[in-house]
Image 1: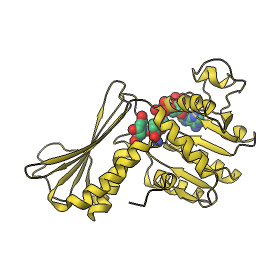
Image 2: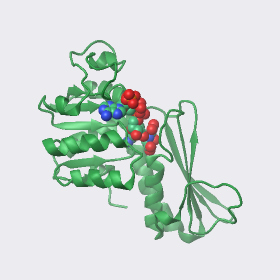
Image 3: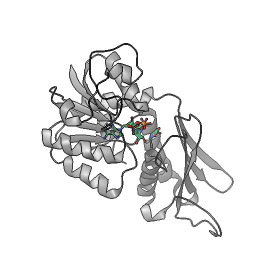
Length: 270
Ligand SMILES: NC(=O)C1=CN([C@@H]2O[C@H](COP(=O)(O)OP(=O)(O)OC[C@H]3O[C@@H](n4cnc5c(N)ncnc54)[C@H](OP(=O)(O)O)[C@@H]3O)[C@@H](O)[C@H]2O)C=CC1
Ligand SMILES: O=C(O)C1=N[C@H](C(=O)O)C[C@H](O)C1
């Protein structure tokens, strides 16, 4: 049994992870955390996460305490700031991590990379298998279609999402840029006013927010007289959680290092 700690257990993903980890053979949830000062501290984890009957696990507000239960892996979908704090603690304690949070600044990402020198960390803006296949295919399409097509990424998420554009949209833009020999300097994250004609090199990334949209990403390749669209629509958070559990099972057998879902799924690097 993989002794697993879930951080941010009362969150949308935290609750989904708790439910699926409990239902998945090979996983034992030995710790659950919430934000310091949360009213859920001291409650039963399943009750706090609105995932059914009490399970006999008390929610704590500090990861260090949860790790004391001989934790073997931490799954963290809290947010970039909390994930950086959690990565530091895991590095000190030698506990591997799966981080699904998004919204990292480059400095925050560097801290996680530094922690990954002492523990294996999977850092993935999207843990669904389907999206990661789309990322591979998008890269291949960009290579094949080449310079004759204008590339744009559009994402849509629920109204509660805190960061924009999504981590997945940025990851898509990165692999598209890499396939086309471009850089982050070519990203256009918003358009307003007299922006002039579109440059050939730019990669547009735009965000929609509303309702309960779980997560949708489309890559557009706009050509002359034709266009190619590649879309992924998540209709449930379960696929993110299942991918994260798969990553957790994988990461505990790895050497220290920073990995992503392409490594977990055995894809060639894009
Ligand atoms: N990789 C992937 O496939 C996916 C990634 N995500 C990403 O995961 C993150 C979470 O998303 P989502 O579940 O929708 O967001 P939620 O806001 O629903 O959940 C985040 C939870 O983390 C809690 N939290 C914040 N700080 C801490 C802390 N220091 N210790 C413990 N818990 C803390 C929050 O508490 P409080 O409410 O009190 O702030 C909240 O309960 C986002 O960055 C999102 O983009 C989401 C879905 C899929
Ligand atoms: O916040 C979310 O909900 C999601 N966030 C991830 C992202 O930013 O890419 C992944 C998923 O689309 C859901």
